[in-house]
Length: 287
Image: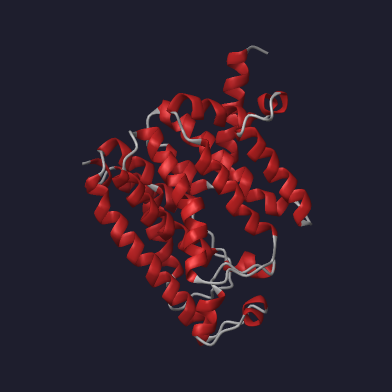
């Protein structure tokens, strides 16, 4: 197989991986130019691989080993096996073509080590730190693919990433509780009179709902701030933040008073596409 054919297959592999495991980000790439789309899909496929490690192992040590492989790859310590891994090959191409810094990618890997253990997220500050190094960092790197980096873009990425991550925490509660994982800050739960045991028992209580409502309020504030900051960055960079529109829609759905927080309710793919298409044509994201 020629180098060009291998690259095409690797790009298709990344697209399929993101479409399967991270549809909102996949759908957002449909509204950016083809060259940038391929690099974005490489970045998002890398993220999907890191996030999926927790589901692919039964003990933390094998997960640590998998994450270490990616860390070594970014440091240049993995050679032949990196070329044979379609996600690694595409990511290295994106890093080269768009001069992406490896350090944020390495920190993203390090932060996701938390996922391998059943320690609860202790405080809101800890959650914000986790989301800054994961969701926000991913948005900042995506924007680098679409436009030159700037402090304004990084500032926007932090608020957008915090919003997106908090919405994911609320939406993933059924799955996380079933796995006895807690990303809703323990401090937040206890502040409203809820407990970890109640969450793991999937007990819907007024105290838990109050804690989730407070987290949703934090996400709402970050969405409002991020939306106001969009006008301060170049138009070509704004499409990298299209996932923010999906997060805003999901938050409205997850905040309904009649919703059971332990009942999985994945967003409609058609609804996600419609939301992102409308956002891509709005003044917020284009002018």
